[in-house]
Amino acid sequence: MPTVNVVRDRLFAALGRTYTQEEFEDLCFSFGIELDDVTTDEAISRKERHEEEKANENEEIIYKIEVPANRYDLLCLEGLAQALRIFNKQDKTPTYTVANISKESMHKMQVKPETSSIRPYIVCAVLRDITFDEASYNSFIDLQDKLHQNICRRRTLVAIGTHDLDTLQGPFTYEALPPQDINFIPLKQVKKYRADELMEFYREHDLKLKKFLHIIENSPVFPVLYDSNRTVLSLPPIINGAHSAITLKTKNVFIECTATDLTKAKIVLNTMVTTFSAYCKRKFEVEPVEVIYSDGKAYVYPDLSSYNMEVPLSYITGSIGVSFKAEEVTSLLNRMQLQAEQSVSGADQCNINVSIPPSRSDVLHPCDVMEDVAIAYGYNNIPKRKLPSLKPLALNQLEDLIRVEVAMNGFTEVLTWILCSYRENFSMLNKKDDGSTAVIVGNPRSSDFEAVRTSLMPGALKIVGHNKDHPKPIKIFEVGDVVHLDESKDVGAANRRLLAALYCGTNSGFELIHSLVDRVMEVMGTPFVPVGDNTGYYIQCSDAPEFLQGRQASIIYKGKCIGIFGIVHPEVLNNFDVPDPCSFLELDIESFL
Image 1 (spheres, one colour):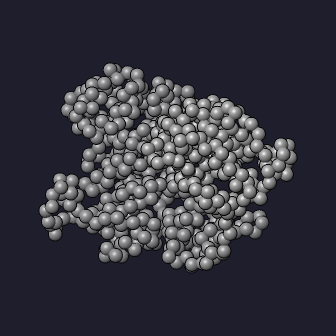
Image 2 (cartoon, rainbow, N blue to C red; image 1 turned 60 degrees about the horizontal axis):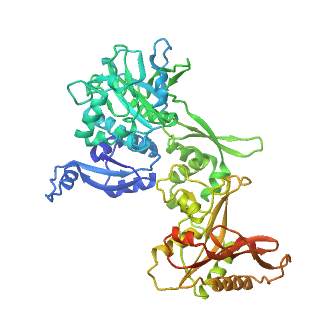
């Protein structure tokens, strides 16, 4: 979870009282956050330098507080203090408003069509008549960094630019130009750079900004923002221009967020303006900006409207396990910055009408509302209940029975990944992908996890391949899930529980695998019957490419093929670097239920 560093004394001043460390830890626990560490800036610096000097009593105490990853409103002292004051019933949830100005008076942001190829979206706002001191200024900058690391995914999805509006002249344009056509003085520099030269400069001299160059450096055009005088505001997502840099004396802040994800851009902009509009002369009021796209469509940002959610009282009480009255629930939600009131539906069902402010982008579903009720009530206050006796699922009982039986036949149980590489699932088993079998992972982190397995064979063969020096024979088995595409399911795929067993030795061990099939069927009370008889099971020749022809058989149970066994094809063994012959069994145990 993200960690927020706040100065203890400044936080206590914002909260209106001081706390002992134990009292503050209890407050954090009650609110659903955690005091992770107590330190000082000097101690952090000494730790980075690997020094062991003794602490000075006059050092400023820093609280490191862990907050939930989706609570972007808690990523700075201002948001944290406001949330805790509302939780303590010291304040009410503020009402955020957009300044009532005409469209003619609004600042305009013209978006050129070329931006669609690199960062197609932009949202903007103005914080008018804001007053910074050194602490709030640093917090303003730090919140941007926290958002960049969190929801912005290191600036790949959203990049934030903040500017001193009084140094600029609207209307503004958002363009995408070849890097050699962009010239400006970047932040913290004193001379002009061409955009391509700037990329080389940062690659060699700036370890922090070097991490973001890959986002745009291979693009033929770079995104850039200009004012009406062709002054560069920023080169997103890399650096702002020095001309419009904000300072402690800045009174009007222009905020722009360029993005590849419009939804996240709106969340980031709302988080910035709702948090720091408290420092404006007209508290919690934000001046809008009109964004005009090349197709003529225009949008006004930010959108600070609340949205309503109807949550049944029965859902909240049933999920938490406490019989709340509607008045109690609304009171608890008000402490969590959610305005709530009781409403009654046509069927006399009591509902809670929840108004969700723009600062609470984490509330997406009734379960989020229910969670906030539980937090405000206190998890430790929820009465303990003895769970009713639970019976295991029939499939799990069957699985345990089969696992014990196979183990008693001398096989060792293994457990392998349900994800595998695309090659292991198909070509390495001599199979072809017809596009209707396997679930393919989009944008896999590793080539080892490209597909969800459709067979337990790759995992078993990989184990043998990595343990080929182990004394022979190797007898292993696994009971696990495979996944096949299934359009009849709401998620488009279905799990099946399979038994797999593999024998590897100086000979194929085909007869041992065959005998294991007979033993499992005997334990299941299934008799061996003549071909075509649907009262039991029988075997018949198969032609699966992963097995040797003529040395494999399908298992037919009540007229349906539920498994296959045979000698593994030498090409498949070679693909998995297995030098010795192997026999393999795969059986669908769900078919017995």
